[in-house]
Image 1 (cartoon, rainbow, N blue to C red):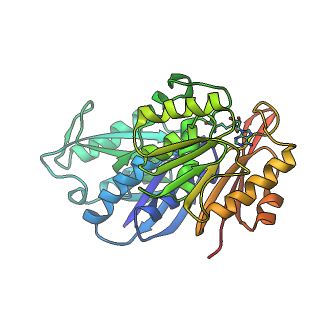
Image 2 (cartoon, protein in one colour; image 1 turned 180 degrees about the horizontal axis):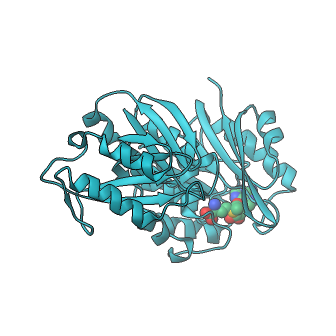
Image 3 (cartoon, rainbow, N blue to C red; image 1 turned 90 degrees about the vertical axis):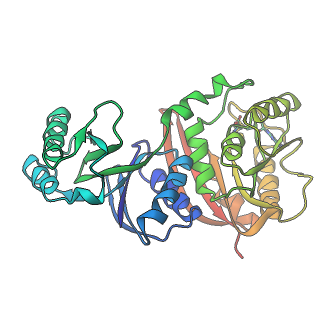
Length: 346
Ligand SMILES: C[S@@+](CC[C@H](N)C(=O)[O-])C[C@H]1O[C@@H](n2cnc3c(N)ncnc32)[C@H](O)[C@@H]1O
């Protein structure tokens, strides 16, 4: 069965890596079918009744996607092709006659000059004439047309709540201190670390716990270290409101009071020596010492995700970690974030 992930356009590869990680965590057996601009198509093995509850869990975790669509049809993005495609679909596979539907279209960049309302109306009309009822406000099924490099069409099986992330914006937390990652970025990184429910997620530079809050919300057990006691207690307050298992230590990322190989995933945003304060002899000592600790603490076969402004690959390799991937994300004119995915070999 083919499914399409309608991706947010904020990065080329992070939304795709996040979708793969979440499908793996959910135990789905999938294969990449096609990568289009802001749309990932995968083939998932199995039966719909087993796949789709897992996709609901995937959507609960995802941050950088909008919807997951069961692909009913794919064609070139032109009116004639779209209308022919929707005419030939067997809708009984996607909606039962007692249910209502709506058609919603999203245009990706400028791959076509179709008007959204025009195509929604025409496609809706075709489905209506096959005996299904329209409800524009509270439909049971939303059919989605993704109008990009190709047209992807099908019912939405799960959606990502953008509002939940906006409601968690750092300024709305009980304790705020500048320099926090936005929740959607933090969540995507937590997902890319492949941490599962009840596993231990560690942030050795936890600040106000922006990353750990996202970990706690997917039911990981979270541990953070923060050198400034005032910020460490702010992190506790922020974690308290989202519940779950958490432990914040006021201390130094270069001397972590935890035993070897007790951590399942690390996601961290170390200070760059610019806006965030460093507590170490130098940035070199801080990175050298903390990467060695990350290696010691991480279990074999597990991942670490590090956000930085500088190239950290030398420190990571020196500590024994393998570089799996590197992404860069332009935040604004004078800040490009590097995101490095690291692995401790078995
Ligand atoms: C870029 S901020 C992290 C922000 C964090 N992601 C958040 O959600 O607030 C880096 C943090 O590392 C802390 N820090 C600096 N030196 C440290 C050290 N040696 N050990 C632990 N934390 C340290 C800083 O106080 C700062 O809060």
